[in-house]
Length: 326
Image (cartoon, rainbow, N blue to C red):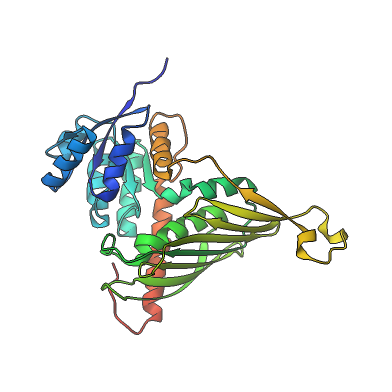
């Protein structure tokens, strides 16, 4: 006998929270019960568009749901997340998990005490290009990522490292599967009091190295990831959702090759089309129902945050200019 649909709510209905609510309405195993927001006018607008209910308080929403998405400003993640988890409700908290390692650890501990699911919204784990590459990944040794975006006021309450780079830090941690042992970084503020463009070099305990660049003051939008491993080279376009794997042919040393094409075969990387956020929410609901593992656990989110904050500290250590640390 199939389980009943999971009653869910969304806390925070800004640009991203709106899409959480929109997509929950499309999931067969979820029932969007309602939303809550500190901006009543915005909440009313979203409720009209999505035909759902506005709750006056978080407490009132939690009375009616089993799980929620927490899509509030990063500075409020710990407070709101603890309120949700302490009531025994499952939570998907948008990235970054918190604005401090201590806050992230509090959330992880609260979820463990309550015995509920805590998932973190690192949506790039569900990117089509990443999904296509996973079957071929084997001991990545060198990774390069570029995440460049035009300026937008959204997210500028924190450094670009916590706003954008953390996506790639999480991906790199997952793909490398080892602890970061050394972090060096540089960055500068351009249009905000916080760092707007940054570059980091991260070395890992297993010998892997990652070079990661993030900017929110670029003219064009770019999201690329290159991965080198003993068996070949990946070029992933995260924005387009595809990529290429140039794989060394078996026994290539004995082929007597005179050009690279003789020893490398090209694999076009493709995965089924799907909206990454929808896949993320579906995975959260499956975990709540006990039908799947948590893809990005609270512990993984805390690890990504800790590495991001190490990058922030490295930027400040390398800079003679005092800029916002948050």
